[in-house]
Image 1: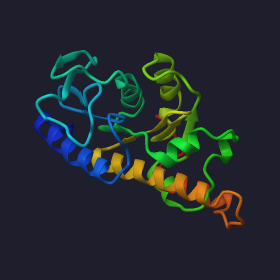
Image 2: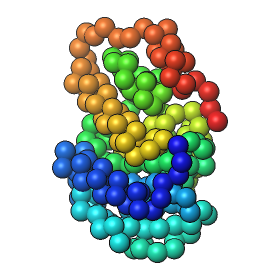
Image 3: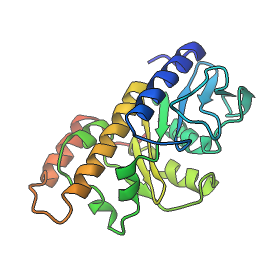
Length: 216
């Protein structure tokens, strides 16, 4: 798709940000949203709440990620840029502190057992979600860890921190992070119970069919 205009980016960031906040996907100033535009990027300002965004205060950045106008950008823009650098088709990135995804990110389990393969939709929307180690928020080492896996998956869990998801547009990024949250919720609700998981060959078929097997 074509890159966002600033006007469209601001309009959709307010719309989807308010929707996610009202539905309890994140609280307070715990989330950030960015969009790739025709002239660079736009991201929610530092310490802002996505439920009450002011279009004139959104942080506008140039193609190198340098601050141009609006309020000071979120310190986590480097995480968003990691996706944009590795996924040329990505035009939107959303990071939340959604409850179930964040809880799952804290579990001491092997990576391939992080998500129980219980429904197909996570694999359809995002591919095989990865988890990266804990780093302090804003640490460039965290951005480097995300960038190392961003070419292979549109969804990443940051340990003890929360999820971050990329999409072709803001709607797809939102649907993806909602599906990640739902998959985390189902995984935690059914933990320790006897389930009928999707077989490994079924997961591989989904990943192949929806284009999630090859990196950039």
